[in-house]
Image (cartoon, rainbow, N blue to C red; front, side, top):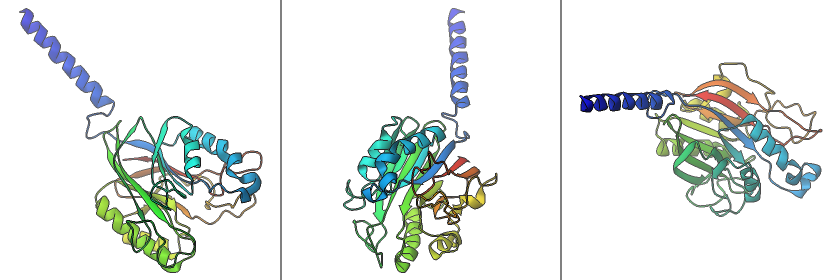
Amino acid sequence: MKRVYSMLCAAILSAILLGACTMNGKGNKDAKCRMQVATFNLRMDTPYDSLDAWPNRKEMVKSLVRFHDFDIFGTQEGFKHQLDGILELGNYAYIGAGRDDGQEAGEHSAIFYKKERFEVLEKGDFWFSETPDVPGKGWDATCCNRICSWGKFKDLESGKVFYFFNSHYDHQGVVARRESSKLLLKKIKEIAGEKAIVFATGDFNAVPTDEPITILAADGLLKDSYEMTQEPPYGTVGTFSSFHLDAPMKNRIDYVWVTDGIEVEKYGVLNEQQYGHFPSDHFPVMLKVVF
């Protein structure tokens, strides 16, 4: 009788533990992943920005990220010391190589993620050029190497797996801008396939009617989150101010693209400024999503 009672208690305890695991989303294939995703061009650190140079903006950037509690976000233009500044928040790690040498030199298209929530399953980088596996400037790009960093992540809360691609396009080369969109689509399909959950963030240096964006939209794999949000977009349409408080802010050049299976509950352009200064010359674009 005692043995039967012990076995019954063990079975009940196992059921309770299994139920708890299911309730918190771990081990439950039907669990939903909810998170806050963003793209944020940090603006490179240059003394030419005078009062808007990085040393005067670093704490504003950190406080913005902390307050809005991004779960995962792509950054552009950051040098390693700028990325290290964001790491001072304590709860983030990042992936992404420097665009100049594939190591640490030059600007990064880094992906920051909450290190206690996400596991990096795979990662990589490629350059927007005819030779994407090695650092270099492509086609008729005018100033510099342009890089995309990507990662395959597992959300430890829900068990969901997704991909994240973060890009920074050339701002002048007509061919480079066109071919960058074609290459991005090709790489996403090669790396993630056409059925995966994918986020593609970045400073695309193009408004919705420009060719680099129309190529992405016409393909159909990626959806513009601005058009997908369930609630009306928050903030300005434009995402670039050049540090001017009175800028028209109509040019939307920073994007978060999503694939089928991702519900965009909210979309916002975060226009905060402190004492007459913006944290960057671009505004972060943030989504609340579920998949």
